[in-house]
Amino acid sequence: MRKIESLIIILSIALMIPIQVAANRPTGAKINWSTYDEAQNTGNDSRKFFIYFYTDQCGYCRMLEKNTFTDESVVDYINSNYTPVRVNAGKEIKIASRFGIQGVPDLRFLSSKGENIARWPGYIEGARLLAMLQYIHTDSYKEMNFSDFVKSQKQD
Image (tube, rainbow, N blue to C red):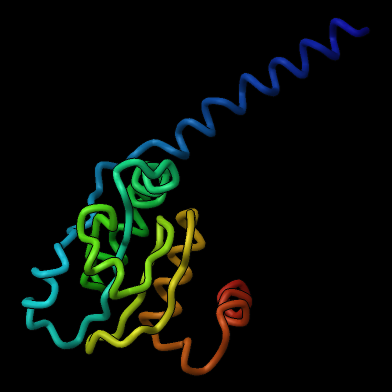
């Protein structure tokens, strides 16, 4: 009986591994990152800014880049609705200090005029980031908190 239970457990685990690997597989979609200087000179007055602060040594930054920033839904939404900016906080120290960056990764959402809307310090998985991107882009942050927004999306 124990052999059968062990076999069932091993088969269950073996069947789950390919599913998890497929879910984390990069899609090939890429975010059209701008530098901070390029973003300031775009002249696109209607788009909000999505700023990603990272360093080369940051493990959670690499996870964001490998998992979250390759999620096709996230990539498409960012490229369609934001001016995405990637800033190496270890090399572009003046910019990082201007935003008060004390740790990475740190995601910032700014209005089209450069006013701070929100921030997300640390790692975030794709579905949650997509919800945050929609929350900010649709100006829902002016009417409700993020938790209420997420609840309202689940009801739709």
